[in-house]
Image (cartoon, rainbow, N blue to C red; front, side):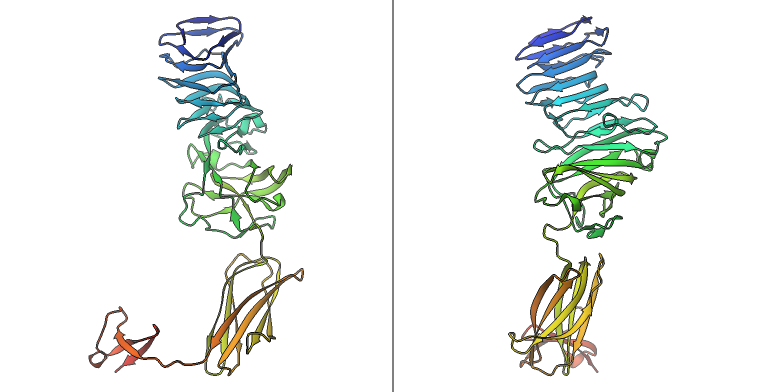
Length: 439
């Protein structure tokens, strides 16, 4: 262990140790010409009273074993350079006022916060090559537009997956401020995680599902600030999405904060960049408001129609057949077929489909039919001639002998029909019921 009591720096300082460098209380680090302090395989313990590890000093962590940054107070770096494939752990809240340079290695915030910049007049920058920040990353933004990666990147993700986010304001946020971004594992804690789905994006892409490995929690310091109302361009890295086989159908979606109740399209889809379905970026423009964000797409094997109901009811001289869809894409028509034996089928009607829809649609047909038993199946055709068959269902007019086993009122309470008037309910031994009016 090396203990640093006081230091005046003129030249780069290299420290090689398998232990820790302890900066003790009362130490004052004074630097000239922005020197480096390089810690190779060395941990840093900051116990200074002023939290300042040298105005203008750039600390560099390198090596081939995991390194730790800790201390009794917030660790305040002017600059920090990270180049260790075995990564780093923060054991205290950390601020980098000027520049974070990530060359290699993941940074596990371990429940703490990493802050880049110190104010709207000193937003700081991140020069990123590789590595992932695991936990909440706080970045300051000036009251102006920004257009570079270093001014807007959040190199976040988990220990296995990098999911970079880049925010570039195209309209100046007049008051500036800070944004906290974190990639959270698992599905979001919404009451209905599929609320708003399916949906159509402004460019005509159907979104039926969202990526369930995790989601992006992007929170402004104030939802009423101009950071949350001015337009920005959002780019997100889709690295190693599960079951991804066609990146062209992926879009960015969001669940607007602070309530996070439903999924909606995210701005205007701009581009998808990358040569592989396992690693690409998606960019949306004209985005406003911060939210929970995610990647949305069609189901892995999308059907032209999402059929949620297909049934029928018997009547003395006809049968009523009903079906319902939750969404339709490229759908053309339905053929309803009937059979008396379940083997030989004939088409009894053709009904046009909606084409494209994300709303619930109901269809029905009356088949004038006296058969005691009838079988029905439904064929759905899309505009390309592809089809899918649903069913069969069975409708029976055979009336089984039933016995009344009791009577209840509308509240479900047992009653005596001999001294009750109004609406009563007969309960049969097969579990069915019938409402009657007793005078």
